Image (cartoon, rainbow, N blue to C red; front, side, top):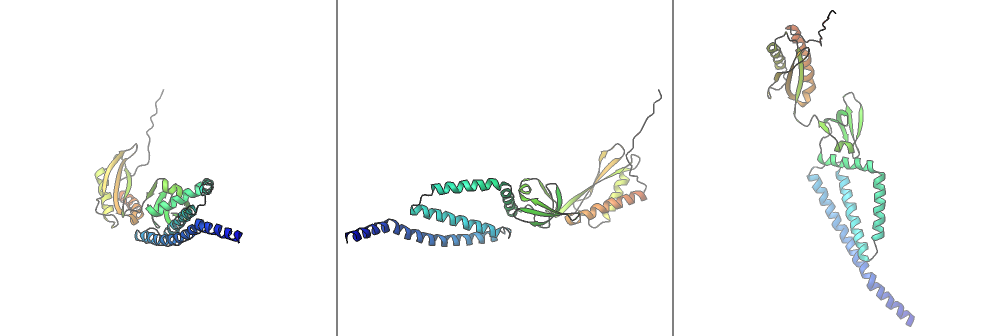
Length: 271
């Protein structure tokens, strides 16, 4: 009986020492999971309200849920009395090793998150970046897929895309078309300017405001170079570009304005 009484006393002491902590930890765990669920749902509603990209929403929601649950479990284990120092150090070392092994992949992943949040471009935009030019077909979490003008598929890693220089040609509604026309030194500058204005005025895709600008940009070795700056809708850029090149040349030919080829004067000296 004395042995049994001792065992019961030890059992009571163990229960008071660890049992109550375990029950409290279990209650905190259940309550914590409920709070995490509410926080995650609120975070998801916030992302949707802020119109964050649909590709990114599930990932951010899952990441926040896992992070909060891990922090909750670590807090409960620490409360119960389990030493966590060695475990946390082990996790840190493992995380460092994985991070170094996947540094390029993680950089692309972070770049994808930045692109999806900041949205410097969207699907359908015409961009130039990382030495490539084309239309954005898809923005993935690690890569961005671009279709070039000659229908090639280019897969650009998001790491460099998010940190490097980039031109978005379709972000603005209008765009300026810059063209240079060379005429000979014998031709009339005012006549050439009038011809360019008349040709531009016949094309309804060239905007009246801002007004077409034509000026002498350079006195070259073989020609007087006139720059024409016409504004158009971004979607009509190439139509205007090809139209002006073709019909200004045709009108110059009709009205006797020459476009000279490079020339060089050679003087022969007799010794």
